[in-house]
Amino acid sequence: LIGIPLVFLSAYVFMVYQDLQRPGIVVLLFHQVIENEQEWSNKYQHRLSVFEEQLDYLLHEGYTTILPSEIYKYTRKSDSEKVVMLTFDDGTPDHYDIVYPLLRQRNFKGVFFVIADNLGKRYGLSASQLMEMSQNGMEVGSHSCSHPFLDEVNENEILYELDQSKRILSEVTG
Image (tube, rainbow, N blue to C red; front, side, top):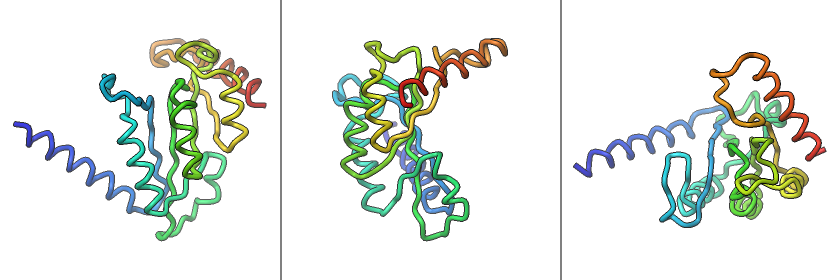
């Protein structure tokens, strides 16, 4: 019975590996990275040990990390170029405490999609952390103001979430 999930996991890992071999830009999405693996509780959390292995794989295989503002350079990517975009959702404290230092150690770049209303709160980044990351090669993008399910709010609320979050994040990052 345990073998069945391992077969599916192996197949999934093989499919991801195959995708990395195809021409084009690969975008990898992460949420929270946790140090204490005993606290791992949901599909949106990534174990630190696994995350480091993934970064090391990309590094040793010669991948270049890019930002959305650099995509135009890779629109005609050759088969020999290995390009990946690393994205991180929600702007949680581990993005500064764990992810950011690991990316810098490997000379990687990342895109951090931040929930603007969480800035300065216990479960969000501080403005100074976000500014530091932005000044050191990381890109900051909006993940809305309050993280509503956009299919459950009206058009005016969607526009508010997008406009307000962009304004707040722009004030922080310059």
